[in-house]
Length: 108
Image 1: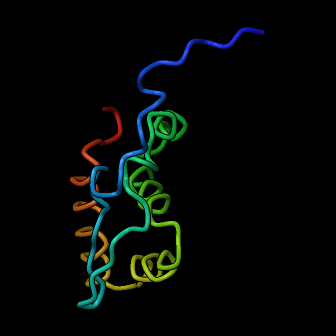
Image 2: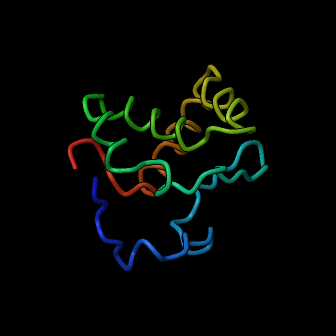
């Protein structure tokens, strides 16, 4: 079986973290956290395609959960899951900032 000829992009080095899209940063109780994964490395076109049938809020929460996978994910999810009006406002603030960071919404 013949293999396809190599293309110039096959020889490129993987971009450094600084060259990739920024990682989403959020604040919890005055402490700043940065997602462990660069958003562009996690939310690929295939990932978007597989998750396209969700409501807008479910889609954003699924995106946020996926990008936050790592040691601080439990703290983020606990923060988002708190009861009360202030917690709801905090969750809305984080989701709005994350939606802006991602630059895509359901249907785009």
